[in-house]
Length: 393
Image 1: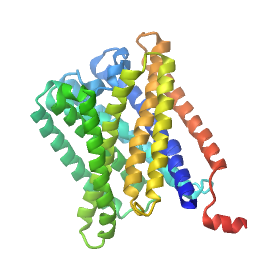
Image 2 (image 1 turned 60 degrees about the vertical axis):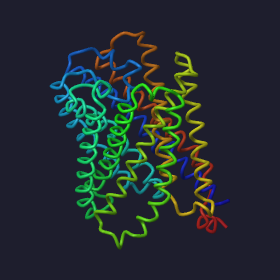
Image 3 (image 1 turned 180 degrees about the horizontal axis):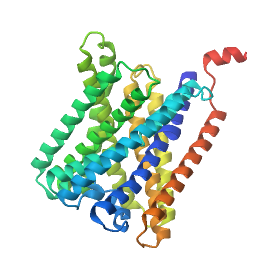
Image 4 (image 1 turned 60 degrees about the horizontal axis):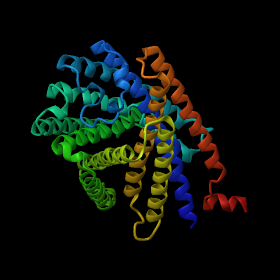
């Protein structure tokens, strides 16, 4: 029971304070950057970037309707912005690891949350690259062409990651270079998840909007990835001294990317449920965000209980899968509420870049304050470790 309580506290803290906060903040910053980039490459208004379809379109996003030349310009611009954000968050992560006033057991939680912030900008890099290669949105192109482009992007992403992993293995965990590589690993994994999600929707077409088809897809994918992680995670850990380092790194990154594939699939399912059951309005979006947070928090508690049972002991891969997929969707839910709030009080009018960024900074600040409150609340109920309990006695 003690290990279960400690595990629940640790996972809920990492889920709510670290990952979900990072997802929400990164998504909001990404929305502002996307609107700014779209304005610069197409000279259009920002109003279109705030439309509901912009954050729910699985096959193109906000850059789906630009020309090839504009997509190339957007790709180069977002790549530069992503690099700057990556270095900035890596610097913050290095500060967290070196801060003695932060408990050592919590440094990894805060650092993992920071790594999610640049990941959403990398999703835009992948989106712009796909539009440039396809010559338009994926939904308007042949599924075979989309499949070829996705496979090329995934192959290049994996090759880049393997090269970077080789360099990162010689760096200390507290170094800036290691933190950059760590953030880039999360970003590349999310990019592969997004690309695979685009491929599935392009091949499935309108069938992916049928509830039972989406349900079967999500359940089948989740079970397949969970089984893969259950079998492969401990196997890779036990064979790392026997297999080649390149093979171990490749398998580890593939398992990480599969978590993001599941997260994107859950998003499609949750979006479909929300669209069918919820009404328009700011209070409905707030209710949806609260309900999603509660339900997915229960999922985290359930997987923690399963992981602490003898049958599933020693399989942290299942916990990582659940926590990442849940954190992605909780972050999306609260980011969706923030954008609904902006659309409601904007009264459908086009916003200027300054107004968009002012709202984004206010939203990120609010998310950070909420994370601090949750952090302080969870610390009040944190169960003592066996070593700490001995010291108290």
